[in-house]
Length: 228
Ligand code: SF4
Ligand code: SF4
Image: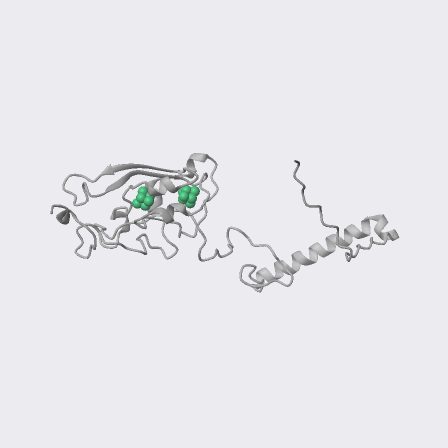
């Protein structure tokens, strides 16, 4: 049996029709109206230019505009993003920097568990896992990403990867959106670039640090426990 769709509601009857502009001789002649329009545009142009030079132009980002310029001069002016805006990804680092305070000498917090790439509905994360070298206390305990690539063009910024990560190793708190590029390849963000991205406060570490293997505060099972 064919499905009956609901009927379209009737148009509101209290709508007031707009009155037609009276077609006077000046309206019909076009030229006076064109001159009036140019005059209005020029008066806005000069008043806005004057305000800009005097430094009295209202900030369209933070101030409400009654009239005047209602556009912003992007990218010099940017609207502030909400606190929970999901920006570009970043990979967080451990606090094991070889040089004091030099974050780039720290290792990635990621353990290449593939939870994020598994959870990603857009399948835009590629990870190649590797083992830590012989002698490293993490060898055989956890892995690290040899390659970690995100296709930011295919990403739908759902945040599932951040939710899925058990190590707080991937975050979307950079506050940046992808800049325009002229080729798709430039949207493939590699591990080094993702590690370079900082949080809004400029930090590269996790804001939710966890106990590391070998750390005496580590609350879970360790290799020593496992020998029992
Ligand atoms: S935000 Fe969503 S689509 Fe983008 S990489 Fe993460 S899980 Fe995939
Ligand atoms: S970012 Fe997190 S979820 Fe993704 S592989 Fe690394 S540790 Fe696993």
